[in-house]
Each structure stands twice: as C-alpha cells, then as structure tokens.
Image 1 (cartoon, rainbow, N blue to C red):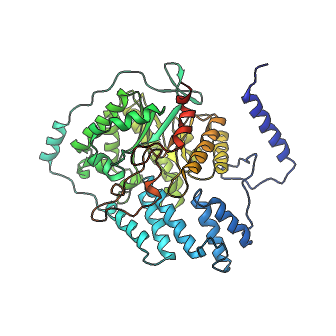
Image 2 (cartoon, one colour):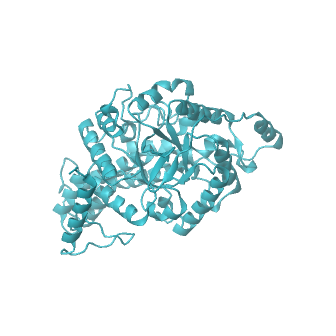
Image 3 (cartoon, rainbow, N blue to C red):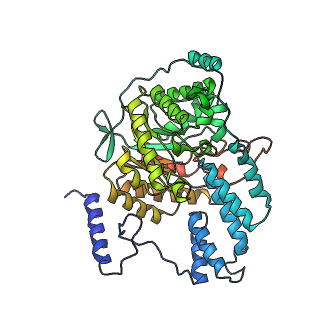
Length: 482
C-alpha cells in the first residue's frame, strides 16, 4: 500500500480532537474555533512563569514578550528578577525598540512610531529610540497641494503607455492557484532592492542595476515578488486626482517588465502605512480612488501581475481604535469593486496581520502575516481554514539575524514553511530578500542609521552572500532536487 501522509495527518487530527474532548476546553478565540492544541498558558500572578515566557519568546514574538513584561512589572517584583543582565525596565525598552524595528522593516511606519514612543516611556530620551523617531519624522510631512491645470495636462500627455508581457493569467481553482490548468504555488519574497528599501524604492531605484538581484532570487526558486507601492511616491498634485510622477512609474514599469522576463509573478501592495499618516484612507477621498483605479488599469493587461493587495495590515487600523472594523471592511469592499472594474483578470487580496478570515467574503484569496512563534502560526492557520475555503497565503514572515544567529533563522524558517506545507496553504512570501546597509533605511540628515534588527531580515547579506536559511528555501521551492 502506498504511504499517504495526508491520511496520516487527518488521523492525527482526529486523535487530537478525541483526546481534547476529555480535557477542559480552552477559551474560544476570536472566530469561536477551538484549536486541537491549546497555546501554552501562563499564570499572570507567577513572576517565575512570566520570566520564563519572556526568555522563551525573546527575539521570536515581541508581542508575547511585551505582554509578559508588562504583567510582570505590574506585580512590582525585584527589578533584577529575570536577570539576564537587564532590569525589567531595560528589557521593556529593548523589546519595544526591537518591535519598532520589526514594524519599520515591514513598512508599518505609524505603528513603529508608537512602539518607539513606548520605548521612550521606559528610558527617557534614549538615543536609539529618539534617533529612530527622527528618521521616521519626514514620513509625516503634509500632502503637497494641487497643481495648475497646465502642469496636469502636460504630465498626462507625456506618460507613455505600459507594454505588457505575453502569457496567461494566474487563476483560482478551489483553494489553490493555477496557470493553464496546472498548480501554481506561490514561493515569494517581499522585495525591496538592497540599496533602495521603503522610501527609496520608487524614488531612487536604478532598475537597470537590479538584474543580479532578480537572477539571484530566481535561481533559488522564488517565483513571486510582493512589491509595496506608496501612492505618495507614485502621484503628485492630489487635489487633481491621479497625476502620475513620471520617473516613479518608469521605475515601476521597468521592474515589472524585468520580473516578467525572468518568469516572476508580482503582487502589488497598495495603501501602505506611509500613505496614511496624513491622509484618511477610509473616507475614500476621490484622489486615492482615482490613483487606485489608475494603477489597476495601467497593469490590467499584464499577466505577470497576480493580484492587488489593497491594504497590508488593515486590521491594525481598527484594533488601535482609529476606525471601526465595519468602516475598514466597507472600504475594502468598495475598493475591491473599483479594482475589479479596472483589472478584471487579476485577483484581489488584503494582507491583514491577524483576523484575515474577516476579509474572506471580499477577496479572491486570503493573506495574513506572522512574525511570531510557530505554535501561534499553526493556530492562526487553523482559524483561517475553519472560516474559508479560499486559497490562503502567508504574505509576510521573517526572522532577523540581528537578534538570532543564522542557524536559528534557518530553523525558524523551516518550521514556518513546514507548517504552511502541512496545512495545504497556497503559498508563502518571506520577509525579505537582502540585508540593508545602514545608509538605506534612514533619511538625511540622520544617516547612517544605528544598526538594528530592521537591517538583518534578509536571506542574503549586504554582500549578496547567502545565509543558511537559503538552503531551506531551496528545499521547499524544489531547486535542490533538480
């Protein structure tokens, strides 16, 4: 009889469910789904238990670390209780600083600012957090005014049409992606060029110099690039609607074309945090709608573009009480309709950090992000699978070698990809391709930036030398089997 791992896996799930029926039920999570394996519990009144949780999750799940440290501090124990050469206050500062670096690396500028401000609550005027806040300050600049009609007409008349590549579009079949009837698993990277991340991406990138990076990633089996687009970099004169910045679109056009030539597919992420600091997205301002429609229509005939991710981390906008959940989901529904009307052959998703299941009725596939422990990842996947039959993609995960070594990065990456594979997800997208030089994530005159975790999430270092995690990436993409 042929060995069938799927049948064994289902049998194991049945056995765990049977055993769990004899045990006290864990508290229900947000969806009402009770996982087969409950997350490890912590006694919030036991300082030793909390210290163990801090040490277990340090560098792996900053949210869990901060929660435990704040519970610990509320008990008012000896400041040296957890020791590790740091007081509880110092560890809270370090945890918030590292969490801010993680958010900054993921492009979540507004949330990174909040984390750095919290860090300063524990170490007033500390130079590291203060410097990072100064680096992010230019992102809060006010929107430029509208432009006169002569300039608008000149710009619109001079932008060249985009020439799409040849090929077929990626579609959805059941809970998988397909191309011409064949399965298409997403093996992806959230891609910024090594020297041009975040604010430098569409304003400074020399597209002609990117061939080496694109070939390097492709040789490891990566088949999808997830690109974060800032409307503020792509458009000018917001009072006049969708007025493109010609140089920025030339860079984006060139990158998509270069990717298509190498066999990549592309996910375009719209409405990243840097766009939202001074612009209330969920009021559906007409210029944002016009800009979204412009992007979708421009690349509607490009088969290399799989999908538009309409808002990365949108659940954080209502979890921080800035908006209601219904306001965000209503906006998502309207924007999905807008993009489908302009790009009917491409797919729609929304890369929530958590609660991706709430987007399922509105999107073609569900995307979520996870930067924590693999046990929490498994439970997150269980919640999603219990709430949707659509394809599910882990749209961002990664581990910084600033806080852990390369062996630990490899092991964490392997556990994550095993969880994705065992649960039949439609794909994964790692954060990120390359470590960043200290001059790349800062803004003048605050350069170079202090070294931090944000600079070290790459699968390759700044010299393009592969870290050990590349080996496991190639196992899961199948390159090492060729």
